[in-house]
Structure formats: C-alpha cells, structure tokens
Length: 156
Ligand SMILES: [Zn+2]
Ligand SMILES: [Zn+2]
Image: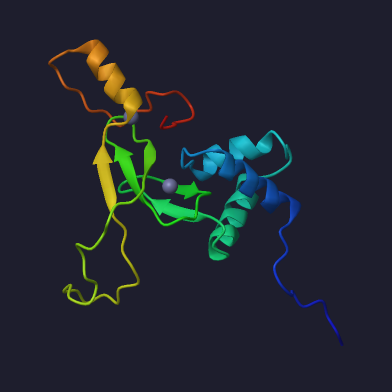
C-alpha cells in the first residue's frame, strides 16, 4: 500500500504568506502581531495555525525564533547570523550586526546542563525612545515596560 507519505515539506500557501509577511518587517514581531499581519490576507486563519506554521518555518531554518529575556517569543525572517538588542524603555527588539561573540567558550563553562547553544542579547534605548527622552528632558526617570509605540512595536 502506497499511502501518501509526506515527502519534502511543501511550502503551503499559508506558510508562504506568513514567511512573506515576516520578511517584510524588521520589527521581530510576536506570534500575535504576525497573526494580525497575516489575517489581512488570510481572514480565516487562526492564531494556532499561525503558531504551528511559525514552528515549522523555524525547524526548516527559514525563520529565527528570538527569545528576548523576560519577553514573549518573537520571530525574525532574517536568517543571517546576527544578534539582537532590546530597548529597555519600550521593549522593542532591533538587530545587531557584526558583533563578535567570542566572550563565551561553551567548552569551559560550568553547569550540569548539556549546552545546546547560547545567545547574546544587548540592551539599549531605541532611536524612538531616545528622541522622546530628549524632548522631555525630565529628571524623573520612569522605566516602564509598557508599549509606548502603539500596537505594533517597531524599531525604526
Ligand atoms: Zn524603545
Ligand atoms: Zn533580527
């Protein structure tokens, strides 16, 4: 019996649109944000479907999953090797290219864990928040993790 065994994974229409939408932006959106983007083209798609497709795309190395410290999982359509920077004001995530990461030698660290890899996260203030700060010039510093840029957090 020759049942239809899955050969090479097809890039389904849904998956293709998710990939296209993700590659259009550099904001490293969350699954919810991607869902909002994709829904304009696929009104019937569910969040669960979007999420499953994102997992598949990352397994196939077509996208990257970013785990910002203390934040939600984010997704990146740019698969070139690069690091990320987290804005401590608004929580947006930007790209860092050409950063050497030789500080950690995985063979010399001390842990009971079997190490699978490591990521470096930079912290900073995004250009939008830096601009706001100059405009305010207030001495009272309030660092909030609230979303100051509206619905879609984007690093310019
Ligand atoms: Zn910011
Ligand atoms: Zn990135």
